[in-house]
Length: 238
Image (tube, rainbow, N blue to C red; front, side, top):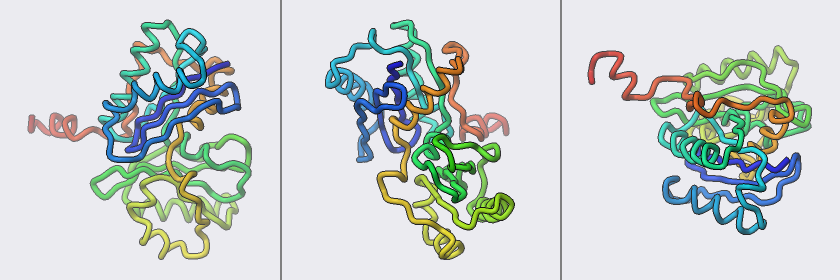
């Protein structure tokens, strides 16, 4: 099963073609470009480089959130447009699950963290002892202090001595996390720290095998919390 996976949910822009658990091609950009500039040219380029057309693709995958409100909308609009034009099914994958998919075979508690602005992080916790991450609790948006309290309590409950932190939410508060967790924190190399479209594609392949396709007409970004405009609207400010 060939899957074209797209990720634009964070400052990273990525696209990949995977065949079941095999990565055929991947593009990853994390440098001063807007997703509206790079995403469609990247998709066209990687398909061309691996001698594929949209007709060869069996399904599309997209990171559905949480993440950047604008980035999520750009990625989802691109995938929904391709899906409707080419009549290809879509699999939606959590951005946090995609991050956690960078780690496998570890007995540490894995936490995926995204910078949510407003002194908060989006986060979720995982058991990554198998080949795919198993989410232990529902994702949430919270202050770094609340996240750290939850991480410690869950690690103790799950009998995990070590903790792995992934994502740009770690970078934002790295000094604080390093000071508080000290030798309980396992450092992770940079190429595993950010969302990868290939990881989203491999997770999507598993969901596709289970028949877990999204309704492209109902598919919406998953923000966890309200956007600033929605928040202000609810308060009658706009």
